[in-house]
Length: 178
Image (cartoon, rainbow, N blue to C red; front, top):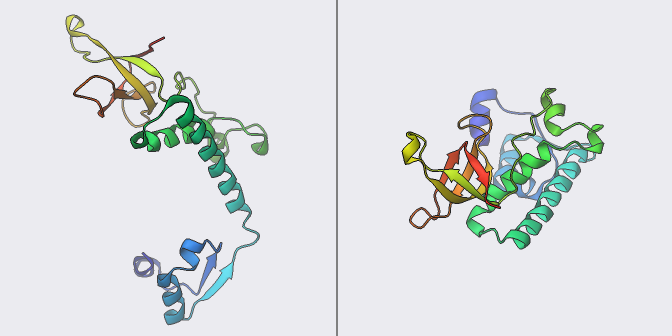
């Protein structure tokens, strides 16, 4: 909150606003500006916001296309948008002189070998990996890349089996079902 910001950094002399209605028109901001006699400044041109809004609209349009094409259930939309954002961040763009957003941010060329499946693709995943005789291949749906779990080729899989219908597992041994 703004009061935590003041405790950490001190009272600002001015707010620079992009005039996003959800923030600039909030009662809390108006009250704060009035009580503390702060100036509210407009940002120059809002160029950054226009770029971000255009990218968000593009992700939403792609999301609608995915929903229609593969019948993604509503409780998996957040995974779908995360996957679409991952795809966007690993795709070279003309506006970035044919570099990816990740390259632009940190200078490293991203590894695209993790993009082996499309969202909601039917896959087989290895259920148990402890003993060779106990290994069982299970049916599931690819719902994203597990960036913070396992090795670099670890995926998020929604289980298709009865009893585990909505559970999500992270697996490295995944094969397409076609």
